[in-house]
Length: 476
Image (tube, rainbow, N blue to C red; front, side, top):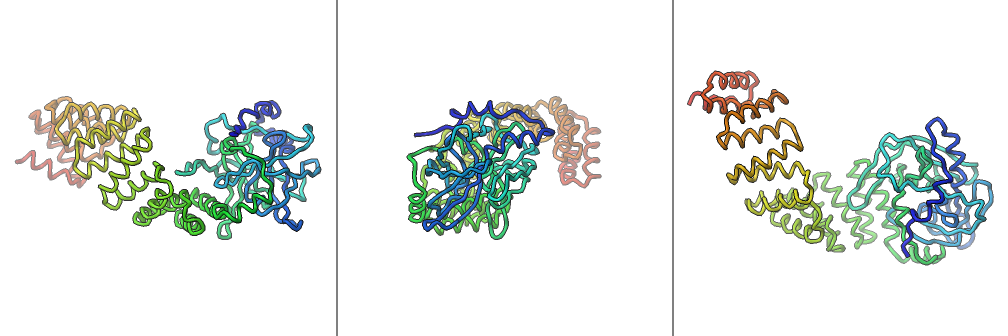
């Protein structure tokens, strides 16, 4: 069945108060009983690994998936020192590095901590606390802030935190000042470097619970399945990617695809990283592999379109964007990209249609209004161009937008109005050379040569390339 934690954690919201920054000790005392230490053992009883976790329900503990890898038995130690064996695994999210464990403990000893899933996004600069409970310690507490919240295409969000995560604390709750878990701390080792970040609480809430599985069976399945090993490399790559280190990130994604050639998400991220490095041929090759595995993945088709566009392969880009739009008709960005591609193919009517569709899906899409106005202007459909540029001006409100409106008014023969708009543009950006050239030629249309010469002198003194163009109009 599908298990949404938000439906069973409501009672836990009453167990944790709202804490101010200056009540940090009180917050730690309230949340620490939720944190547990985890120790894993192999088939022969040998100790394997240590980590942390926390109660999300009276009989459920969340931790990192890598903490329980290769385990045949898992022991949970509470903050009071009592130890219990986990009954098994209820859910796994390999890409999120999450494992949901079942445990039977007296109800008065299980202290679930609420998940912050009602809030939209943790805010950069927000204070947080990481509360772990590795073996050998009564509890470990580190505090810091949310340094960044990154949206990674094809994955979702990663929360970067400044609070250090010590070995053994991987799987700890990352708690805000309201005593709510915003994420689960993940410590990844990537080429000798530690990557400290948090997987958002929303991924915990979205876990799908199945039948309980023993650790031995999970380990056996993982050994048979290449995906588990590939996912570890994938997550390491995401951690590096979240720091915009695309060159290092791509190596992890490529290694993941070498282990599991049918790992679409790893191919996709490799393609994305290559694209950000400007290696568009490599990006196209990788993303085509993602689409091979998941042909109905709109994001992969979009990236194929982007790489093809960057390589000047506009027909291929058009085909990819149309396929993406067919898969997901609600994405305005796809229609916008299709419009740009059709512009390169000199198919103006189709370009205009794509841009109008983009605007219908995103009514405040400023860039689409700009391109739509430009397409109408080029097609001499000036009234429609003016309407599009006016909307662009409302949304953007900068000198460039006013200049577009002014140019269209000029072509419509409304010279007085164009002068007013060009002056507004120059009031926003006095060194906007094209707007000053346009103002000069509008003055000429109004037989105000003196004012036009004044604009020329300004352009000449600023060594603008538009000076000579205006000079030719003044002195034909």
